[in-house]
Length: 438
Image 1 (tube, rainbow, N blue to C red):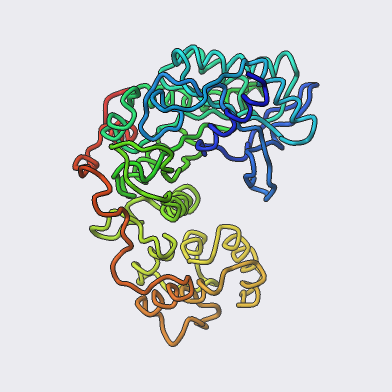
Image 2 (tube, rainbow, N blue to C red):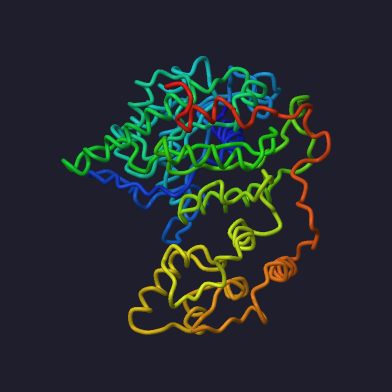
């Protein structure tokens, strides 16, 4: 098969993996080409606002597993091919020199065996680093079930690695991906997290240490299985707390093939994915806990408004907040006001009171924030703070229907059976530290 044909097949096959982001790597250039600290993920945004790109491909789409949701499943009839490590290295260098990309995101189906596949991923990165002197960004997929020695070697060359957890519960994993198991996924994930911590200590002590400097990430598919949002966010929070996870990515289930175990939907649940990302951001950056985002018996987010606004409406005792008297932690919980705005308010407050003009100038979204704050005692959200009226105004502004019940999460009969064990799922127990040792 010609190289361009391989490229067409294996780039298309890689598009469903979203566990990638800007690098955040501190890997230096030691006389070669490229700079990992300036590299990132294809058409993604870095923390300073730059849009970056990379070559995102599979090493192979020849897979030994038959996962119900995957386009590359062994029982799915698609064209199959594989790159050699040398071919991927040459493609990366040629694309980089033409300024098409700033790095490489390399994943793979499991060809022959997990360790065989991991060794080929490692060899690709070694060729780029040692033989070609490439110091651009490299993100490698760590293959569940592979010998950890191969993953550890790959981590010496990669800026970021990711082990995809795929599904939010062990029951769903057994049902939709019968060739995989939680121990094969969580085992290397835990070891990578521990090695990242050790590497960071070594780097601070001696200036050396190159193991996965941009951290590890993972991906969960949402909508292919019946776990509620609360279960998904509990799992993510535990991964951040116990596995040294940099990012958890949420991928709306895309119906790429028919299978009796999959929900019968026409379109991916993109709004649900979006709200999960917003909830994730509140946990990672705004000091929220998962339990705060779900009110009473509700196990799913209300998709009509963002999670911070829903939390604020459910906790009227905290609002409105007087910005000139509030702490940082109080300010970042105000809808429409972010961490940078909170820091600027506190800095300006050292020299005098801030006003509404200042809030607008620093980027506070006053069309939402005005309902939850006062400035020098002035409230611009109406005559008084009344959550039910504020909710109506926010819903009207967002263009959503003013209905009392929550939008349905799944269509009727989307799943053949209800997941009754979500609350005691062994996967969640293992990640949260209450299960068996890994």
